[in-house]
Image (cartoon, rainbow over all chains, first blue to last red; front, side, top):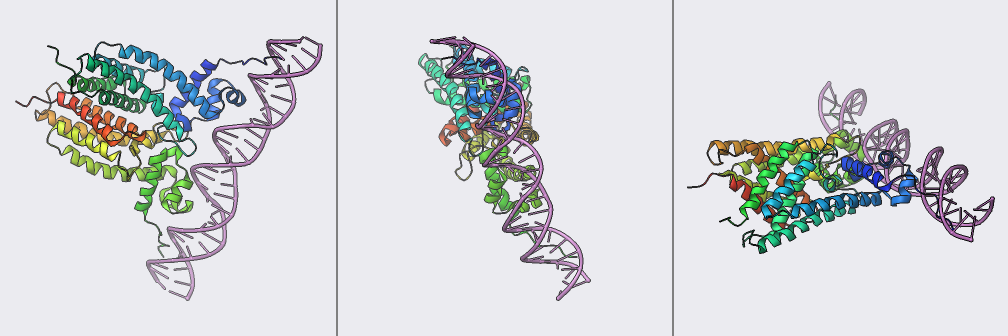
Amino acid sequence: MGMGRPREFDAEMALDQAMEVFWRHGYEGATIAQLTEAMGINPPSLYACFGNKEGLLKAALDRYTKLRNIWMEEVVAAPTARAVAKRMLMGIADKQTDPANPPGCLLVQGGIACGTGSENVPFELAARRAQNEDQLRDRFIRAKAEGDLKPTSDPAALARYVSAVSVGMGVMASSGADREALRQVADVAVQAVEAQSADKT
Amino acid sequence: MGMGRPREFDAEMALDQAMEVFWRHGYEGATIAQLTEAMGINPPSLYACFGNKEGLLKAALDRYTKLRNIWMEEVVAAPTARAVAKRMLMGIADKQTDPANPPGCLLVQGGIACGTGSENVPFELAARRAQNEDQLRDRFIRAKAEGDLKPTSDPAALARYVSAVSVGMGVMASSGADREALRQVADVAVQAVEAQSADKT
DNA sequence: CCAGATATGTAGTGTTCACTACAGATGTGG
DNA sequence: CCACATCTGTAGTGAACACTACATATCTGG
């Protein structure tokens, strides 16, 4: 039995285009017509490959978080908690104002609130944001064990804090904040982590 | 000439209900059917009173920001920059997890990204968030003039930072973070402002 | 109590949406 | 070269959407 006609488009390239549409318009704001046009395919190809609109979003999120997690590995490789926070937040400031992408973060722009029938989209995004928070928390737990963070510090709270600042910066980027403004926010934010760091005597 | 039949519903009470629907589902996710049902009126009454869906959102935002600005006055009345930040962020933690309202902040949940035809909704929300940031900035400028903040501090950056943390906390609240988790974030965040405060000798 | 003005409820309007039926095209295995 | 399987483009499908026409109801001013 034959294997059928091969697909004529590259799924990953198509996903990159879909990602950009979701990023710019959100899940509900993105229409199938916009998505198919950006992807350079017709609706039946989209549905054959990704199931439905939500399946396409999940595939785009998978691709987004895969790249992001690679970057997060570099972030948590920084030598101290303070350096981790600085590398993370400065990187966020740059990435969220990268003209190659829509401003902000897909995990926020994708859809914070959705209508009936798409309730699990915000949930899906939150779960992926939580992954990064967990990576940070684990890194801060280690920093505390190494004596890099004060014995009184709360690694989970610190991770949640850095995550919250990242998200807030993303929203600001999407509403027009420029790179310098975000870097200043990052700079201030790092000082809270510094306050939790052990004195360098 | 007569003045016509009087309206049978209370506009402010109806707005409160509409506000909750936008808050929970976002601008695009909220349907006229949901809004009219929550408001206890029929579509023609809605359109006669508010023009269209976007007009209703703006009216709801006006009501929301009016109450919020009153609260912000209390916030900036705190004696020091640190106290302002603490009062603001602790208040945010409580308000965004108040079971009387949907979780998070209407100015974020309302719509960070929107589809074609609603592009100015995110813009509208951003403008109102900026109001609060301006209030904070003015307060921090005063704090710097009073010697409460270090001469090297940047009041605008500090205000942007506190605003970013608020927004980030709102997103976290909407995705399930509880009050205690947000308070911990607020607690850490305040330390960055403390680091910008002049030493109390 | 009548004329003008505005609100209300019913029942739609056209449009846009996510999604798909179907026929033709293009591949593989025998 | 044929049976079969999968993809592709055209052209829709029903459903849900924001919004409204219209008849009726309820007010004020004279």
